Amino acid sequence: MYGYYQPDGYRQLITIKCPDHMKRDDFNDWIVDHAQREKYVPGLRWYTVCFTFNTIDYSDGSPGLPVKFDVFEEMYFSSLKDLKGAYGSDVMHKELYFMAEKGLMEPDIFNGLWAEANIIKMKGLTSPPKQKNCARIFGGCRRTKEMSKKDLKDWYHSHAERVIDEEGKMIIPEIIGYTHNFSLDDSPFGIPFIDAYCNNWWASIEDMFKTFSGDIWRGQLEHREDHIDAYDKSFFIGALATEHIVDLPNRSSSS
Image 1: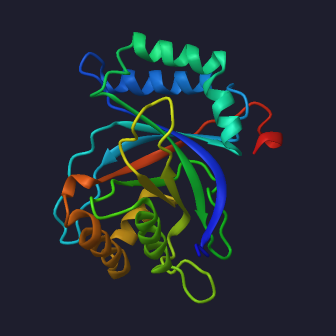
Image 2: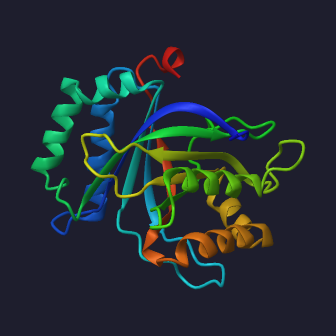
């Protein structure tokens, strides 16, 4: 049924807002140091840290809602068993303790979830792209009252179908990676703050904004606004970001 989806294991997603007691540069430096420690969790297959710099505008060009976090990190695991093992590890527990000590786990600062991951199959492209210093978007959605989980997954899949041609190629030439991820109800972080989220990758910020100037992208925004934002604009959480790939120990054998 979901022909464009290639299951890709599980994700741990964390979003963090820079607290008032920290300068943004100091916060960013701390996050990078944190990632260098946390990359040793067992079973980790891929690890990215993304620094947000703007919201996603609406189709009419007006600014989207302000981004409520300054960084999001994704940890990729091949199985739910691996994800659970990583969360239960000493490395993860120490990092969560350090984050709490820094005041980074307050409810207005921190959100976390676990998700089932799906790569959008695109002929000639591999997601996530392995090149570094990509530009990315984060697009998270909550379900409306009328939507079941299946309804939301159906809508996300239809959203991807709109930009894949009959040969299986992405019709927006600048996009080099695309994933859809669906939140699990059962995680140590409690009720997920969103029910699903997508990621798109571009080789550069310039390529990203080239996409944003086109009619196809505008049509995708309208498709989302008609089905999600029309219910409540706060049900969509969007952000533009720059990606930092964390090099893993013995990465050649773990990626």
